[in-house]
Image (cartoon, rainbow over all chains, first blue to last red; front, top):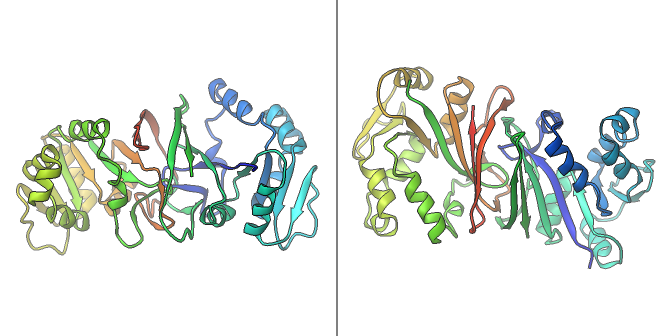
Length: 186
Length: 186
């Protein structure tokens, strides 16, 4: 069965996005060579990328631009050419290259996708879909970059989780820029 | 000047306490020798311990009991005999051994305590006082145990922080039991 991972940046107070929707705090101070090598390496797999609508629209508005190609050529290439799916009941089409628009029930659709053949899958950003899929037991691994910043308010990946969920730490790596990369198994 | 630290357990979604006030999730699976040695070592300093009222009352109701002495003798000894201060406008007395009750303005009182002579100080639990002191620039270091658990809802240490606060990562240590200890400088 295809594995499903989550990859996300969070603040020390657990938020993947600030109260006003900002995620730029997760990318400040990230331009050192050690961390850039990690980002490029992490983006070099061929997993299908899954998005909620909000993250999809934000990324579709950034990665195809010349700025993205200039600043992060390896990641931009992966993001633009890689296989993608967006879950939305309101979008009528998904114009970003190589994207499937999925309009059915999130949990059922992901269950079907996992059982069908294909590459592994990874959820990027898209906190709103993580808690639903976690509660349904559909997420296999969590990859979290803990940023050395406190936001005071925002949204967590696990908002609305119906009960405490225990994970198994499988790896940790601290970067000179102050970020810590933690990986967990469900 | 006396240094002020924060030591706290948090969940992967950033909470030091669950929505119903529970902190027991932070202590399950903590009884292995590697982690117990860390806890005892960490408790062996002579810092003055600072508390908000809620955490103070919870700890004052636990550490003097026979169960605490039996389960964690080193930590219980430190907690019961160490110098303590509780910040509260509503308490009329603080009966736990070696505790000072501080009734004035939190920020002003801590500023005075830092300028006076004495051992370093550490805030344990007491999330409600952390954000105020952090915003006033009075906290020097943060020591955070990230637990491999998601709660779904709760309270963060940085609730109500008026603006984004950037910290400097100074250390990280992953434990076999799945906890990660991260330290930061303000």
